[in-house]
Length: 195
Image (cartoon, rainbow, N blue to C red; front, side, top):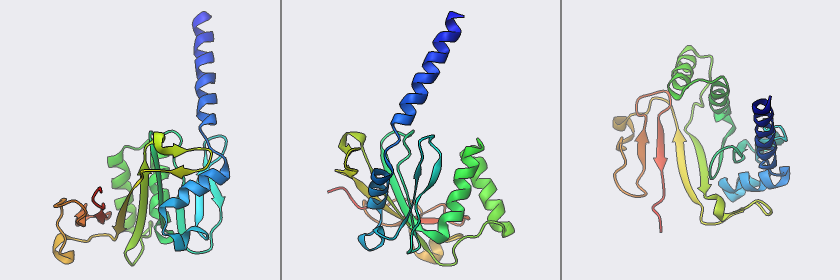
């Protein structure tokens, strides 16, 4: 009985801790849109977390940009923004992870669905902006993130090194390169060199 009580107390404490990590809606929005170019911030749709930790729409947007708030259960700070046409691909990935699928299973499922035409990918290249930093540089009171790093990702299925002229491995700091070349999730990676 004593062990059961300890387990229950620990479970309750962990649950309370996890819920306390979920920031107010306005702070989640303010931080999430930091990844977007300034011209898209005001009208972006923002996805974030409710008090139960469920991903919901915090703000409906008007400009075709979707921003994803920082996951309170992951280490560090990471927010991303991308074109709305890429949301079905991103949402499907999140759904597969929630089902407990491994990364390999997630990639295989999305590949099969894209090839079957049941998961639509954008016809044109689609941009993703990812802003990351450390928790020590983040203010949960103001939503500001200092010393952040940004990277740019351009998705278009089945790009190859030959068709784009890009290397398929990193070559030099800041130089674009093609990741997952020739696959359903091929994307150009651009990580600006550290100053």
